[in-house]
Length: 303
Image 1 (spheres, one colour):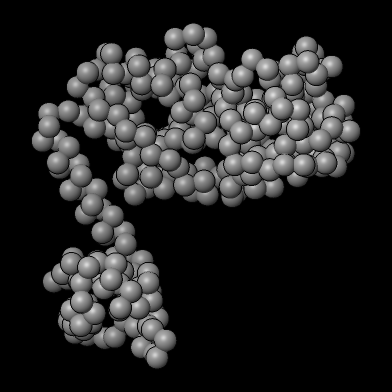
Image 2 (cartoon, helix red, strand yellow; image 1 turned 180 degrees about the horizontal axis):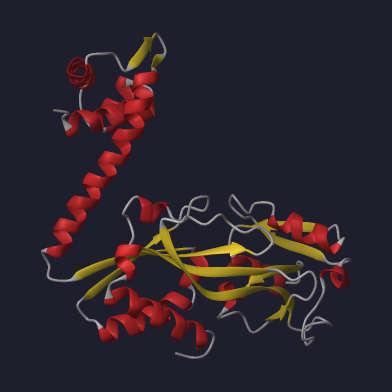
């Protein structure tokens, strides 16, 4: 039978590429780690590493074991966490979500859920940008709130249930005294001479701005790149340039910045609720979905 502690040591060595580094990371001696890996290889009946003067690297069997050991250890950690959680008499539910959902949408939804079900304890985990449903697949969340740009939709995982929540339109952020700040909408081509502050996006949407401007036939003069929408608003207010942001990110935006809906080309983030078939059948799922829909209706208004 495989020893979980030895698997943990093995993954540490695989990740660091060194018995010495793994030992330091785990506050163990190098000989102790080496001995345990040797015992693991003996139990399996074959070596897992190619040993060299500059460290170790996984052989084919080692790669096979590493990938499956990681999944197993994650499941054991989740089991231990869930077991401890159920002992406190509360129902613990984890929601996976993208960062801007936490500006206004999730707080409003949580307010209703916790008011109606004080026995529930809610937690939020940030999604993996490339594989947002991985939290469901790895049983680290019961429900996921994800988005996709309509210009570049994501593939659907048929294992889970998808429910559309809302369309989150992209807006142009302008200083409050900008000549187009009071327009009902503004096309990108009308801002062709502006300086732009653009947000860095993670994969798979790191090129979404390029796609959007290319459709408009505009080459933006980007003067600043930022990693968050709060900084973007501050830079727009300081008249460094104009910017783009989804409406969910600016539910409580600055008074010296105006968000004008983007005209052409239109671009929208479609927000969906995703859950396993098992969780969909629970009353907690129904409550959370209703709370999210209610929060979306009242988003941007005082709580």
